[in-house]
Length: 257
Picture (tube, rainbow, N blue to C red):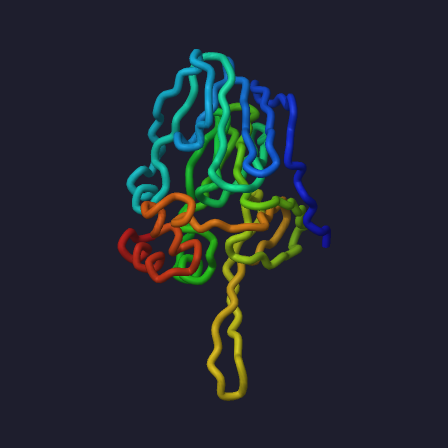
């Protein structure tokens, strides 16, 4: 099996899909984008600074009610006008640029999206089943991006350092439940748990991880911050799902599959 390799933490003067961008800073990175005819969309709380001639406005996402229940943002902000704009999350880590060719897509762990060119389709998938919500730690929702209208870019925040791994067809890897950042849609995700025993008569717990099966690319982050820590109380239901809490199962029963 190929071993995960580190993704470089900085980028200068990279151009793709109609924008040029720069990733700077080693601890809490800044993403700076030169926008023009091709605008970008982003979560409003990640905006760090902008030039005055760059205007921003709100855009409602589909499935707003389900996203709100899960503690996710249901509005994004997007730019109009030309100039420079910069973003940063309040967490140590890496900013990861994903160049998505037309017709391709990427699945992203919730609460880790920073920005994207606004020609990309942005939807979500609920992780169904109590096993996934209660034990899998795979997130209540997975953000799904697809470049249906030309080449596009998605920028993500990875906590800690980020490593990428390419899996061959049928090749598998088990990953701590909070540690995956993004994957190709072709990579299958399932929750796996194993009982732990402390002795002949001793009780045991369960060790749970996510098993990924190729083909495709998977990214792993070395640090995990639960949504309740990084997003406040509004993210508590998503946190329960991602961390294995009972509330995730209760919300699943209330909202249906």
